[in-house]
Length: 173
Image 1 (tube, rainbow, N blue to C red):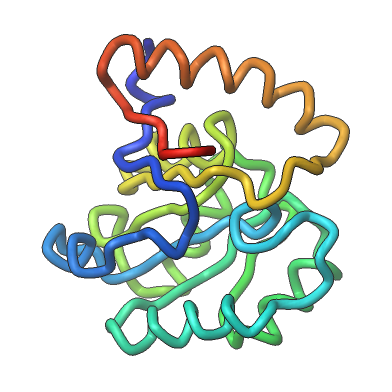
Image 2: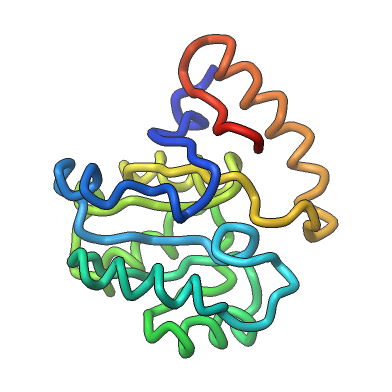
């Protein structure tokens, strides 16, 4: 299976990411997806738990940016509410938005991790850039129509990676 589709870490949710382990790897910045990574794709604003997670990132010394394939209006709401830079309409797995995020955060790829819920956008895009990749189980089973199709292929990839011992599945996904 292609190394580019293999996440460095696979966790149940963003709340299981070990900030101390990231710091030990020299990571100082987080580039995160929005929909079904931080919130359900139909949730309009960040909840208190998510705000607390962002505050914790800041307390641990991480800078953060949102890179999303969604529209500027949606992504902008969250970026404004969370006071972070955002790059909508990213066309992930293309590299351009990741590069912009790295520039905005003032780090190079070795110092950043990408967090997302999709293998073919977040993990592939992050691995193509040389970022540390963290795959999370989607927040919701509801997806945009196009994403529903890629989820079927993603499931096959994740099963294959697990069989090859390249990744574990989080408990109770």
